[in-house]
Image 1 (cartoon, rainbow, N blue to C red):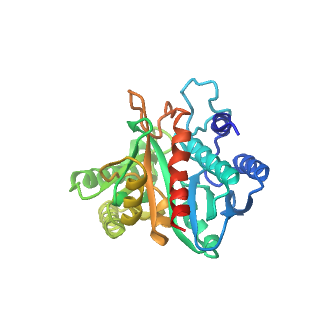
Image 2: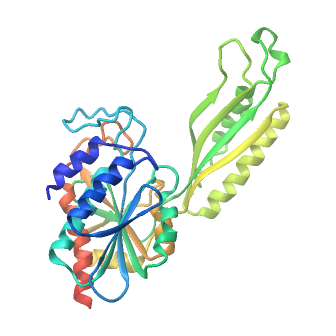
Length: 358
């Protein structure tokens, strides 16, 4: 199997959360070629399994979804789905997992393995939806990787304890009353309320958490007082208890601002990802198997945290850096094909280590 060609094909067909239909069909086709049994999970996801003997399972996970952004890499295998792109490396993650499936099908290790191709990591919390179908399997540990150009190509980077932050999506809406701008005092300006709210939040930043709003929508035309304004943001903290506290504090502030301006405040919390905790025992195992660089905790959000909360888990950053860093979720982010085999090799060492311990 040519993993580079597979990666290129996956890169050309980016699909967003819970719409990974072509991606799912392609992966199912490849799994069928390997005579690997599988089932559909979480709508557009796939759970494949290898049963090589008695005992518990090791699970390896790759996320499938892409981002709603236009690609600017200029590569020959750039996105063919206009307005969407694999800008977070999930095409590489899937290719690594398919390479591991191939290796398992060839060498047939005497262990039980699950391969989870998970939808909707970027939005919707696909990992949480996979927990129920996983209950019928005795899973001992779960593994995943994430590419990044922050670290040198081919390096393995992680830490014991909290690796990624708890991450919540939050929508803050102010509702007022529209009026012609010539008679603006007759209206209740929702944008004005939203701006005061935003200013007070940013001025009260203590450094204990990250709270930022990346999208603001308000008003319809330039000469009408806007009767609605919504701020779309995210909260990141080292522990979910802090995140929950901040949600409550934001709601109190929003209502105070709204009451002072005769507005109405509405708050909606979207996806709620817990912090991702790397199991210390698995960290020691990985350090024994490969060279590991211990890194600092990041305010990245990652729904693999749901799996690592249920089972002993480990995720590591797989370095792709070759000089200039553009970062994840960038229209020019394009990891090298060469890191695919490195990812497969690391996961394979985890499997062979289990084989030796039998």
